[in-house]
Length: 322
Length: 238
Image (cartoon, rainbow over all chains, first blue to last red; front, side, top):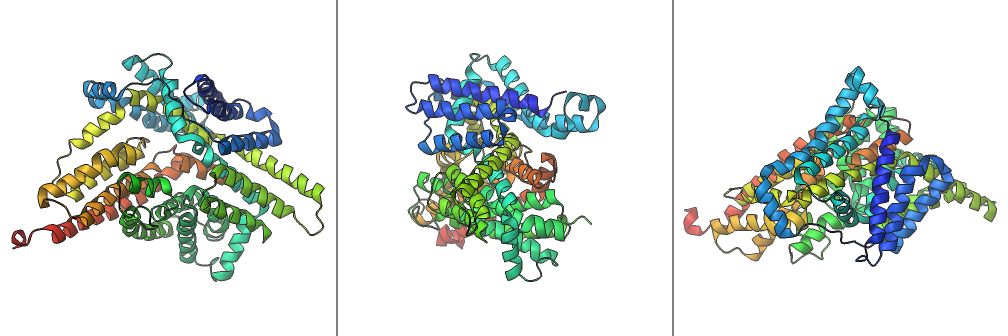
């Protein structure tokens, strides 16, 4: 049976290969940083179970230090823009097919592992989606290799090209999930929740009030921080779980899924989300690109506010099944 | 109340544009130290608190490794990009024959949202699609209809091109079961002792995705009406 432990070995080997290729890339002036960063991440995947809690903490600290010092961007061998255009013309829409294998296998594998006996013997049903996702990506790579016949090392070079473009942000969601755990131990959620219930009377009795507080809180906190991923652990521990879920009977999966999307409405309204709202204003040479409410944000606010209201209504009417 | 200092560190760090990974680690340590602090606490106690916070963070980091396995998918996406995947998407978009700004942006919105829902978040984006293709196509549609555009409307159309990309991405990607935000939710709930499957989360992103499509379609329809009102020549209006 394939379990998550096997998947971690495969993904760890992937990051290790990226790390070694980074070290060999003389075009990257910061190649040592890239080697260390991806190498530490590979170590986490391959040996995290044996490092102990403090060892893993030091590993995370190491990743933070390397990322703060700064990663560089390598220049792996790839095809030229002309070659790509030519290949796109020649191969047509069939090019989308290997990419669609990934969600198809992820979904199919999940269903097979959960619904059939032989599937459950093949794929660990408790982590079926994650395992199926990696299987889907592997099958997609195999199909693309057989069809396109690139050099054998090409997938690693291409993945490194994209991974270097993402940079340290690749581990931000994992780091934020870990911060959520520390907040949980320290009781941050309870404290913020206490503040909320002090200023909003009736929060523990009214589903409507609790849903509004959680969704609006997610959006506002995201506006301040520019990142819904960072707002999520705080607001969910403060209002989402204690009030909407525990006190008032909300379904945790539905509450959290819609709560995150309420946060995304905040992302649309803030110049703090530079990647999404400031970078395009610069790229499109908008005259007001330096102002806090540039044209992109002003174009988004009239969609973001009705959508936030829609999220509040959806959570209120869908998240309380009983 | 002192434990709230950690949230203050997060807010301050993001406002100051410090490296977010550094902000997260600083917030975790601040929270752990604040929780342990009493007026009697000496250096030794605080040092022990720092170590135990680092250990708690390390345990969570190790438990949450699956949040970062999504990058393995780049092996496949990179390989296909090498063979012209993005170029193919560009060809597909550029073949769109739509008469108005709103319709050009609407078709792009729908394609972008569907692609993101299937995990293909890289088939779009501001440098790859909006600047070279979507914005010029939308401007072109307006110019073909109304002639030379005043600056105000030109920039309004460009802003809407960027907005269509962002909104379609945000409210499409969570339908894909293995996007970082879904795995972050899974990880967070697991810390609190609630086990959910990614599929359980992503199906509940579908109602909001439909609401986003409905609301933004209306906005693009209104954009067309506004452009017509402002730009249509007086003789054409009669």
